[in-house]
Length: 164
Image 1 (cartoon, rainbow, N blue to C red):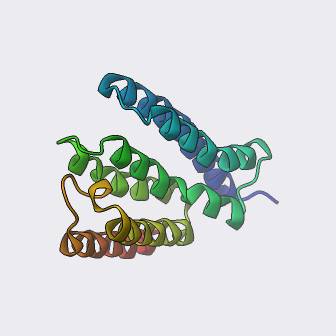
Image 2 (cartoon, rainbow, N blue to C red):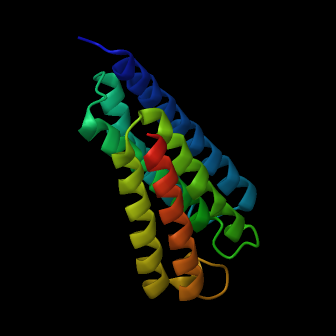
């Protein structure tokens, strides 16, 4: 039996996968404008990230596993944008898309993909801050800023988790 919630989740999956492919094109266009030397890597990683969610949608899956896989896109695409803008004054502004992407996961009507993506974002920022700090923030690393962003992600998780 298909419920209204099932239909809503299936539609949300289709929206997020389409948005992922649109973001892949957007990252490609941005990389071309910037003349980014790592453009091919970013576009390839974006396409690979969206492959499994696309397969889930094509198989008409919207179960918990499918929603979790799709939820990873909220961590991957903004991270790729931040990496693409590495060294650019706009790099810091790209971080706002982590919050946009997390909010978009509400269409799945499930707090678990939001929690997974939030955890991935926090772990990603902490690891990159330790290994390649310039990839997180233009110039140099700043653990206090990473922790501040982590608190913001945690607060957004709390609110979005509550409404889903």
